[in-house]
Image (cartoon, rainbow, N blue to C red; front, side, top):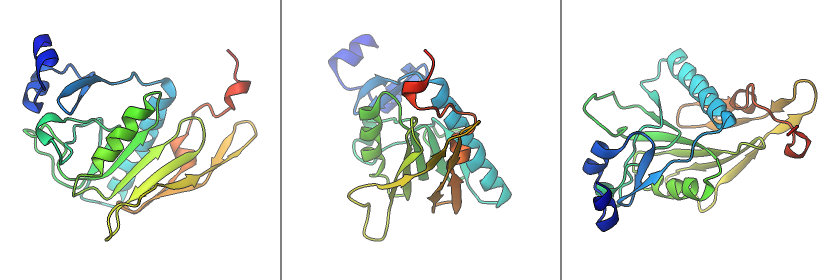
Amino acid sequence: MSALIKDRLMTADEFWEWDDGSYELVDGVPRLMSPHSDKHGTMQGNVIRVVGNHIVDNDLPCRVVPEGGVRPRLRAKYNHRKPDITVTCTPNDADNVYIPEPILIIEILSSNEGETRDNIRRFSEMESLREIVLFHQDEPLAEVWRRSEEGWPGIAEFIHGELVMGEPITVMGSVRLESIGLDLPFSEVFRKCDMRPRNKRRR
């Protein structure tokens, strides 16, 4: 398989047989995903919990999937992207390797910012998708793309939370997820996360 990677593009079918869970397929080339930091993983777990509880409490016909495969419309044969969090309202099919018809994708910005933003651009090609949300780790900031009847906006809407210094530090504000009818508080996104300014942290 190493020769396959070097000499020609890998198809999604070949990728599923080859991947050990550490990669995503980007235009026919396997790309190693950056390891998650403790904070990234904590934020991801927080968002999954809140979104999942909202879906259950409101009896929505949806489900939340961490790091499941999605397929951009263009060059679908050569792509298997893995966003941090995906919401779909299509029933699960055990034989499907892709999450069908995602309506909401949430990413947490890590050191691989360029790769994350490239994925966001490609996610917008999917006809079912209605919202994309990108959370920053080092400050309460979210970038929101929301599809309207005219299509996707040219730039994201920036939603700023507010740090209230104290012991512990609290985070005010929320992000509206129109696709599932949830106001997601920053306090839940950053629950049990270290929000001290970076230059004041102990080494």
